[in-house]
Image (cartoon, rainbow, N blue to C red; front, side, top):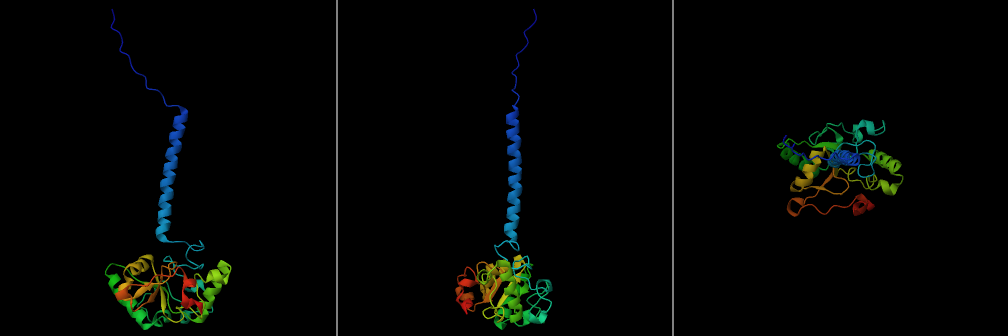
Length: 227
């Protein structure tokens, strides 16, 4: 008499609906990971030109500061008005945009730059001192982009009130340079003044002992800009 064959337990085959659901969930997971990576990269890089979130003008440095290179402004303006090449640093005093900065501001910048250089970080000056003509041109560009003087004022001051025209403000890049100053600038009297302008720094003599004052949300909140 033959021995009985052992019984085998059949494994059910997944239904097509389950397979489709599994594939859809896998694709959704992959797309989610990609989207998160892209978002994180953009967040670290900062807002892009024309996004309405940060940098006001069409010519924008990666650090965020409004560009004042020759391609960003009228051909009638020149280095004598405060235009700078992309490679200008805080030590390039032969450029008026750097050399005409307030002495205390420039000395503080150069001192901080020496310290940052030990970490491999360089301070580029995206914009420093400007003539009223350059400031007016930048203001007009901002008005054209944002549609009103009031909205443009969140990013670009008038020639009469701008700290750049008086030589009391500097825009620093690239990102690692401005980020370094955000963290350590107070030790040298260098403070970020406006929350929406991470690249804009001014000298505050009391900062090394008292710390930097609270930032204004944007220049329109600054009493100095109301003139």
